[in-house]
Image (tube, rainbow, N blue to C red):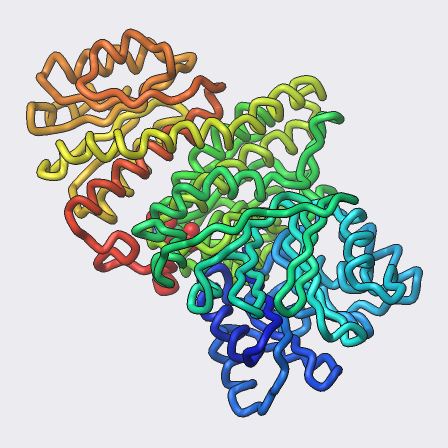
Amino acid sequence: MCGIVAFIGDRSAKDVLIEGLTRLEYRGYDSAGIAIIEKDKIEVFRAKGKLSILKELVADKELTASIGIGHTRWATHGKPSYENAHPHFSNHIAVVHNGIIENYLQLKEELIQKGYDFKSETDTEVIAHLIDSLYEGDLFDAVRKGIKRLKGSYAIAAISEKEPDRIVVARYDSPLVIGISEDDVFAASDIPAVLNYTREFIFLEEGDVALLRKGSIKIFNGEEEVTRESKHIDWNPVMAEKSGYKHFMLKEIYEQPRGIIDTIRGKYSLEDGKIYFGEIDFERINNIKKIVIVACGTSWHAGLIGKFYIENLARISVEVDIASEFRYRNPIIDEETLLLPISQSGETADTIAALRLSKKSGAKVVSICNVVGSTIARESDGVIYTHAGPEIGVASTKAFTTQLVSLFLFALFLAQKREKLSRDEIKWYLGELIKLPEKIELVLKHDKYIERIARDFINFKNFLYLGRHYNYPIALEGALKLKEISYIHAEGYPAGEMKHGPIALIDKDMPVFVLGTKSEIYDKILSNVEEVKARSGIVISTVTEGDEDIRGKSDYVIEVPSCIDELTPFLNSVVIQLFAYHCANLLGLDVDQPRNLAKSVTVE
Ligand code: AGP
């Protein structure tokens, strides 16, 4: 999730672009760059790292240009570096892009045959060369032809020094808005970028391509010229960076359907019932005898569910270890071990140490990570990237569900390779998986209702979360979320363990959050609810639509759509995230930056 901005009008393009990128930096901060047309020549300024470095670079540059494009990067293809920084250019054309081009390797091959010389590892440079290869004096026409060849998601802005009075933008499955103010025309990935200049916005629709000139906008979709109604947006810039949400955490909870779509994009074919993990050289890992997942905090909870997926679907034994314990317990690791570190940041010290220790013992390392170019990503033999985009809130939410979906796909991938599942069985699982984003949207509709429930519980001092099988780790995650942002003490437990101790805690002051969605062991979790009620405990339950039994026994019920056992953790995750969020928000706490915590724990 990068941020792009473009401008043509009567102002200093440099100032407008830098201001825009400053407002978009929450979308990515691996590198930044601008391209402007100064005296009919394209000038490009790029810098690796935070935007402040680019700002320094252009600060004393006397630039009169009033047309330009800009980009702040969240790396997906190619590590954070100067070469991989946008804008990318080809002869007289410069391009910035937000999204993922799935068929970029194939297009790259074609363009290399045509003599194009690639300077970066990015999918975006392919777009610049592709447009140049199709250019016959009309940038608008070349972009429209070029996007027909692209598969994946894109929001693009392109300029050419041969046509210094126009910008061409296009979008498909990636956000792009146009801002208008008298003769000034702006385009950006998100409203915050240009909110200081205008409140009038046009939201481009899927497949729209627009020609921006001073004081004019022309939009095409396919061969048709179309008009798009403009809307007045009444936000202030800070509100806008959170897209109108009060906290980044809430915004990131709502971004989970998008995160899952982006994470599975290009990794499966429903028609063929096949899973692809181009980033993993399977030959190097096909002799593995065991998998060891290492992680910390929320990522460790994802690992526990990963174990259930891989053992159940691919029949390989999986150990799951907390990295800070793993590194000092002299674990049995050898050449037949596949180490699977899971980390949102890719910089967690204990997980890095576990990785290095295992490599020394000959293990192969395939990590699941959200940050391209991070230490864990760099030191792994293969990386499965979660495409959650930058996660700003300290409490991990969208990174968690994108880790889960990567683990589910990886389990199907191993099952496919080891012929543990037939093509039809994989097709069936994929069919269920692609319905997930919509089902999460339905759970998000309970937001206000969950807030009302939370209002009744913010004064309690202790909580117990219970779940079984795939939802036992969600009980752990629910407790962690509540602890880390509302500071209410909570414990998560596999429900079957209750009778072995925690049931002693149950009384009218101990609320119990039960993940009671339908599953093969539904009756077991029903009896756990009855045990709690028998000791006058207060029960909040998630149930599957149409459920009667657990609903009838619970004090508060949150209904989620029905889905296969393996995918219920996704729906339950959203419920426990929203519950913890509302408790913390109602208690007036700093939800995005809770006390004593850091987004990435880079020390032991
Ligand atoms: C979760 O909400 C916390 N931020 C924390 O437990 C986190 O999951 C843990 O520090 C691991 O971080 P990582 O995924 O970046 O390695």
